[in-house]
Image (cartoon, rainbow, N blue to C red; front, side, top):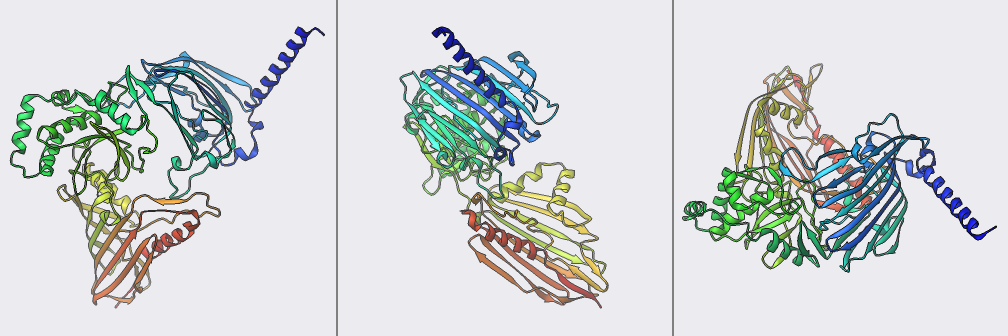
Length: 633
């Protein structure tokens, strides 16, 4: 047989074999059984190729095949692509296959939805997203997705996450970078050693048969144990501005010189006004408090994603003129005001989230989703959240507390830690005067005072309509049947960061009657209601991100025709997870005092101790339902 014909036959045979292998990936029946267990979707094939051509250009290509088992797996299709004037989509296509691998629909680029990449609260943004809008006819189905994107803005470099989230497994995943730029690439592998992942080079990795992960109660954030490869260019470009990124100092220096310099000029009238307002202040902290209040009263938050990749703040004079800005603009405006009265302040990039998400202090890259302001102070740095017009001065609990942030100074970037609200700072005091009738009806007045993180959890209720406030208390005390709520009052003491809620309540069926006896649960107003989930074989460690302390005291007046037949003994439990104690004392024949303290400690604990923690919480739930037995005369 002639050599040319032999080569053609071999190539044809190889092509047919490869086609058959790919065709198998569209059939749900070919998925290994272990990858289906507790999976909403399986990533059959996911290959990313990135060619870095220069410090300001790279080509991104990706082919992804995903089998979706149910509605929960749709979000793992990965059929979404962002773009703007410097990020251009060169090719985009998707195909849908039924469970047997038969193609049922094809989507070209023009068939994808094209929308703004930001929410309706954003004033303007040139960032957009193309995504596949597909309503499944049946499950399972498979999506094949191919895309090519040309990046002329290289500040954000695609990382590799072979597992995209909980309840998704990965059969084959590959990530490869070809660097032809002459610019050094930095990489940081995270948790790769814990999975079936092979390293071929610093820029080439493959993963096979990664089974799905499932969330567990109190488990740490997914990002803390999932496999990730982070990558960044040491020289990059953002919207035509060249940057250096050898370390955080370099990156911060670039931000200061290229993004912030020249943005802080204020109108003369504002300079005169703010100096007049602070002329009698006796300290920098007092000046900062006055400036912060001034900013809150004059401005409002609105997202403005313009400028250098959405990273350059609006000019301070424009914020003054318009009266609004985003987190960048408001922080920069406040910084300009502070510096005008001689108070040092630093712009800070951070992750804003209820979970504790930190800037990676070991790996400099373009990251963070929020900006705040830091006023250096010898005793303790003061952090200012400039987007909240009702926030107390220096209060950041629940959204930017206890995490690493990037401080931008004239000398460069510096990683610093924000305010930690300790367990005793996160205090809730609940006091109540309760009346109990012979018919088992209760009525009374309740006062709740909260501080620290617990202040942040409660303070927002005052801004809701009255009907929602009533529902809030009914949900808070959802174990009280036929609860009536009225005379709601709030006091927000921002100077002392103390939020007070006062409410009158009543219920006709809180007490259980059995003949002449009434069974009454004295802890009517602050209970732990649920027991953490039980696991036969827990796989993840567990974490309590924020500790807190609750102190309760309820004075209970019982009707003259009732007398106490039995009361529980005092309880006190102290362990590494916290403290729980309660007591009931008989102040007189017709007055009882219930006292309770519950402390939950912040901490990261090994999975082997989860059963002990669950037992502790289960005991609290049980004792929070403890009963007093009353009888009629």
